[in-house]
Length: 298
Length: 257
Image (cartoon, rainbow over all chains, first blue to last red; front, side, top):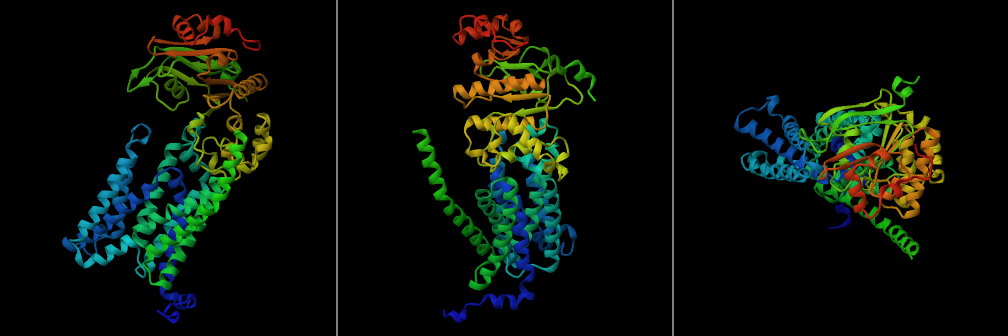
């Protein structure tokens, strides 16, 4: 391949009218998932976003199946949005119903939701061969499938969730990471946890439908992993993860255009590259701190 | 304005309180009052129901029977075990203490933490950690971490401070420093303190009141130190720890009462 075969960034922006909705969707979804990902990563619930995005994927596949097999085309009940939301809510309710001591059953429930979602999506996919491209787009992320209405819905949901989270951040952070002390001081921890889990479920269901399961998983884990490594506090981590997520979502789309890659994979790789750089850059300071501790101990 | 309960000095009252799980009491009923300025210790063997009692008193676990009443307007603050603090969570000392500012729905007020910066610094100064404000919490020594957590509890100006194993990861000097600090706070602010600790000998030299639980012996007693130390189960437990007689070590060096 010669260099003239590779499109340029200038060409990308020349065709902005064509790419504006999917590229902006990547940025908005990245920002939203970056913020929420801080709770996912620090709460050691990394598998949560994978499980919920697979459940959302199954919901979308079931919606297509209802449309094709049951002739429900055009029915709002068989809309992919409704399918994704219903399945995500079911998975979330399963998680919230866990009363095991220390949440010991949570991992098993997450595993169940992930596996049932992934296998169910593939199984339903064989019954709706005509829609198999949509299913693949859903799992890997789609280059051009984002419609203006999809983007508007995503942007509205992101604006509402981020506004609520920015306003109630102090309470949400305490409910997530020091719930007992917060309860003793009278904070409404149960309500805050419902808001937290509910907003994660809603964000994942909407983002999965728009950008696909793989980038949703990646953008809800990797930007937060990098941000919590860099930032001095949880609040700074939230803002930094939002910025990294928005950048990875957008830049991933541009890289996909330049190198003819699947968009979801490209967004994932950009986020992974940022995280790898941040972790690699932190290695010297970890070594210095270790040697200081060793000297102090000696 | 002070409430009638505050005037009376009673912050928390347990009357025939039974703690346990699924309707089954773990321990015999307990009756006691925690008053302003009291320094309570909660001790007992492992698995004796200490944690269940503590969580019930804090309102984190439902009681099985009896009554428990925290006075209207009485503010509680809780410092969990250090092991419950996740060091992977990034935070400066300032951030850790600022968390303690919020009560109820005050977290919805975006200006609250800005207005209370001075209060945060004051709390850090009280515990002797004023110079640590901008350091990362995870990089502090165990003793410094405990001081910062106490500052985080103090910043909400509680009437009753509850600490779970505050000295578990400390050396001897660190332990003494924490108990000395709590003694000063108790004397200067009439702060009531309830401490759960396995370090019985040190605890008994500082507390004015004691709650002792032992499921196997069927004991749950609470009251002034000399009253509890007369309990046969307590004496048996105490001897098991290698002490000759409770009264020998219990006698505090003054300031208790």
